Amino acid sequence: MRMSIISFFREKLINGSPIHSVAGAALVVSVMGILSRLLGLFRDRILAAKFGAGDELDVYYAAFRMPDLIYNLLVVGALSAAFIPVFTGLVTKEKEKEAWKLTSSLMTFQVISIVFISILFSIFAPQVMKIITPGFSGEKLDEVVRFTRIMFLSPVFLGVSAIFGGVLVSFKRFLVYSIAPIMYNIGIIIGALLFVDRWGTIGLAWGVILGAVLHMLIQYPAVKMSGFRYILNPRKFLKDRNLNKVFRLMVPRSLAVGVTQINLLVITIFASTLASGSLAIFNFANNIQSVPLGLFGISFSMAAFPILSASVASGDRKKFVHVFSKTFRRVLFFVIPASVFIFMLRAEIVRIVFGAGEFDWEDTEATLWVLGFLSISLFAQSLIPLLARSFYALENTKIPFYIALFSEAVNILCVVLLIKKFEVMGLALAFSISTIVNMGLLFYFLRRFFGGLDDKKIIDSVSKIILGSIFSGMMIYVTRHFLGNFIDLNTFMEVFSQFSISVVVGSLSFIAACYWLRIKEFHDFKSSILVKIFGFDSEDNLS
Image 1 (spheres, rainbow, N blue to C red):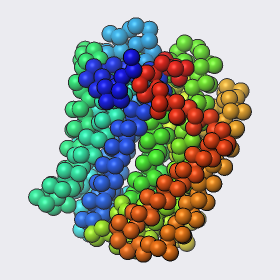
Image 2: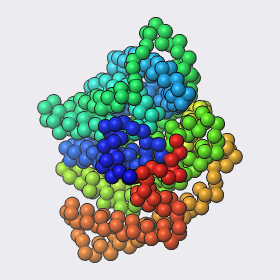
Image 3: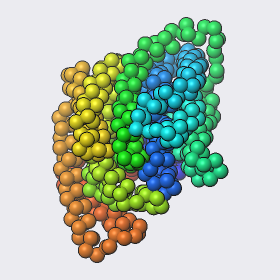
Image 4: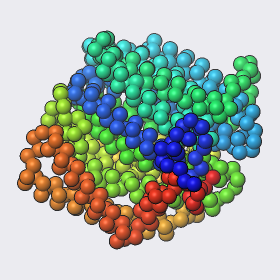
């Protein structure tokens, strides 16, 4: 008997039972992702209304750079490229004791490393931040240093939490893993609403720390139920052969992540030399377009990753290609029309999300143009997580690193060429160009490795999805201009009405195009909604 969707989520949360299908796992990650992203937009609205796009938020976003760099180098590289495939391989071979020993060893290494490096960078924060934010000076630079020193606490908690998340993903227990970002946003919102009133703007930094702690604590019970025990001999943990394997795999990945972080550093460095609020504007726009990226690109790639890793472990190349192709097409089915919707309705989106308090029309206009340039590469941004994880499942971390390095060179060159004429919009355009280059090269080399990635199905589906998206974009354009004759767009409700009606018309147009063009992913999506949510017993079960 099929369970209701509420019963399904209750079982996955309380009993911690695994989710075996890509569609089911992506559904869970997406639903929780929607809540997290909505909270994220609510968080940004609070920040925009309280401070506007000015010095305070420039300081806030700049302070993330070094803590994020440490977190991504020591944590993300180890987990996405190395820990999950190695841990999954041990569990698949029924070597759970070794798997938990690896978990304990990696946790110990990361905590020690992150604490040491954070202390070191905290001491030299004034010198480091002067390099990263050359356009800041005086009190603004002092504030960045103060924020940064507090935020260096967050990688410690997020590092442990990320290992917990890797364990849950390996066991395909996606629900609690997906709730953690919600808790992170709740912490930041508490900081913005409560801590700021009590401690001033520095309360934003303490909100980030609270969010990191909540991110870690919410996952611990589920990891404990999965069988985790801290089993470690402090004197011998570095001799763990599985940990050494993780180190070998993570070094190229960490370097690749480092290149990506250079991208963010480049944005911060150049944005700090532009008008006040430029860094905040870029981050606001990036956070909006990150909603579909997180919901579809990251959720589907994360759901497919353990299955891709297991396919490699079992030597099933055919299954690997099947899962990759299906996930690739599903990501684009959602992301291509989403990027068209964002581009066509970017003014309404920015006004709805940020149009309050200190966020004025000048901030709105700058943000909507940055959002438009970023949305051009949304499809590429959404595919990179899947393509990169496909290489990591193959235990190949060098190719993504070299491609990331080349793409970052393209990004820097484009920034230098574009920033003088386009200012903050030039940063967004450079980002989009380099991202498309990155995605294209990853796909080319992965396809060459397998001699094909179900190319016919991909070309057929993607061409139809593009046609359907163009049609829906045209209908949105007509609808917006028609409604402009009747709606003044002076109030929130007027803007929201135009936006809502345009989205409905665009969505119905895209659905009609899906029927007319017979887009397979649309019919798979219908099947997932009507059947797989309740049973997970169809061919999509790929575990």
